[in-house]
View 1 (cartoon, rainbow, N blue to C red):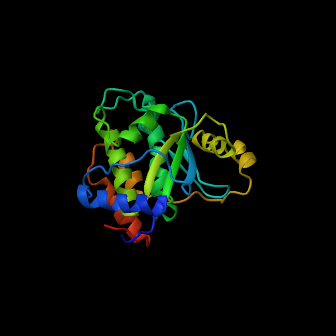
View 2: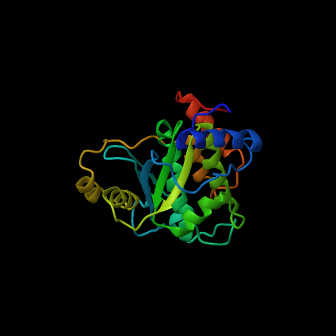
View 3: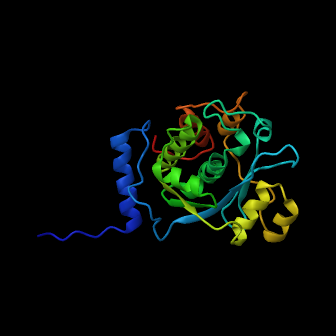
Length: 239
């Protein structure tokens, strides 16, 4: 019988991902098919702080290397005692969801590193890791929107995405992400002294969605809007 060339793990995973895209369509959650990142995956660290009226600038930070980083301060609503109508919890206490936004930023703020690649976000919240493995959330439609959106945008970039758990502030980059989330620029200067002066750009469609009056709402078209933003910036996508 004719012998066949054994595909590399990364190539095989991309092929499987493309099959999932064809079977699921861009509106359906795309299953990972595996839980262990491939050897050549690109790692990043993210951290999110709970909202607070006493501490200025709290939000979420992402660091992908010694140079590139991004930061998103929370909308004012997330710093108050406002209740999220989607689930009945206070926005500032939805830590698994807030941490998930870090993973979202890892994908949409650094699309050049996601294209044709496997990317991994290290997060110190077990709840975020578990919901990311599932790829959906039946308890909170806003969290479900985030999970589906990041899967669809990653697929559009022909990439695969993972979230893994890390011990809090156990590495240089996780310390830097924690400092960014608290707007602790003094610590960030110490940990990443040669970083880029400006953070990487976050698509405006996502920032606008997060700042929706009354809080972000479920939106099945969020991925389409973000993909459109990325196309306008010159990034090629599969759909």
